[in-house]
Image (cartoon, rainbow, N blue to C red):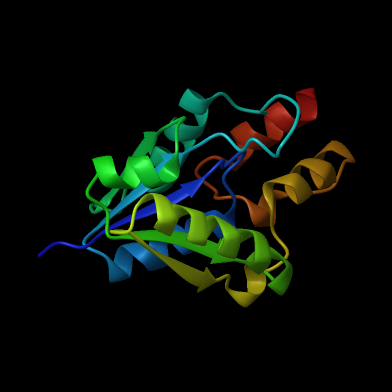
Length: 163
């Protein structure tokens, strides 16, 4: 029986931290679906459109045969049901991430009892990374190249500097 995992996020933009979680998940599960979703808590417009984010992720994961990239604007629990997913993968950077992610996991389990949430700790070198931190550093003139996947870093930096 094939195990399907979903790795959801807004990925605006994708970081090396996101990519690390995706790559590690791909080693564990038969199929990983990276799904770009909207985050209702993040106000303001997105840096990249949903289509652009999907394409950036595809470019970063082209070498992972068991990774597929998609987008969805509804409930994650419903998406997991549609895809017959067994697991939702959530990366945790710090204890502060846990409370919110835990609440979401309980809600998803209530809405879809067939899916489990698995928390994956960020690797030490990525513990501080977030799309928001990268946006702020870049907009203030800092070098964010070390934090971005090389396949897409120049495109992301170019767009950030236009803001």
